[in-house]
Length: 416
Image (cartoon, rainbow, N blue to C red; front, side, top):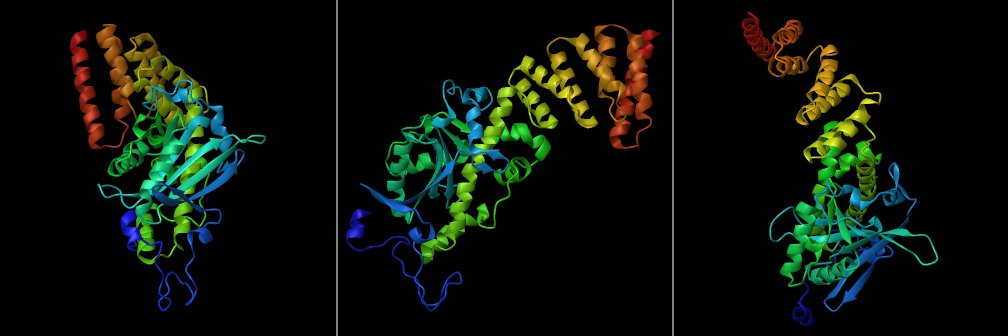
């Protein structure tokens, strides 16, 4: 690449000049195209032995509010609180001040030729004689020839960090960048760093209540954030970069820088929400609390899951959510061999149900097979049949009625 430049061969957009007869993006004829430095004041080209790339920093006070949360809120939690939840055993003793947030903007979603033309990073930085700050730094490739310089600068920054925080980075950003280091014959420290990917815990905690757990959806429904008109849809970003490479027009790139910056700030406040709730085993919403308990049970943290569920039941729950919590608690108690306690919970469900007979069935099973009390098992079966008889006739209702009738016949024979 260096030899080609000495011969005058130009790759990419940095030396392109736009024709004035057919202006792009509404530019008035005759006006010179903006440079990156003009579009983004404070940005500069940082040179290395491998060339240079465009870099811009933005500095935020820690009390800066992003939606409903402040950036400093994350520092009240410990990374180790998420050890069991985020598939990362190396978090003990670490502090969120030592992590690097990372997000890429790329030329596509997959394939060996996919390039990260922008790498956004963010980190907490102490200031001598002043308050700590939060720095958002963005590396941008003016053309593909800047990639090696960018990767070296990113590696220097990673060398001083204890770990990574991303959103879907375990599946996308980190493998992509690791491959770009390999293609440039450079060592990569990315796979060796402790890594917290926020997407899986966000799904486990919030999907039952919110549905979509895309970062933009979480901003609107969870973080209380609405982006400004400066944002551009993520799906358009590769096309905007290719347009820039073709024309040299940087005018549409401001929205890409804004989009990437907002992604990184949202990762901070989302991490604060997630880790605060994991550390306390207490969620802001009762339905999220039930999701957390289910997650804890799946991880084998039965005692913690039970405490989380009982705490949710102490609150003022909607009726449907209350039943979900009771069902989950009864399942935990049954799995732990504490059937007598599970019976009490099933009775609570059965006495307050009008469209569900699963608790009746569990009680019938318990009294038939564990207590060997066919009369009590028959009584719960009869109650379930009476309830099903009031349902609207549907395939599910007919199936439930048939199964219960079969159970009743067997129990009647046992009694006889």
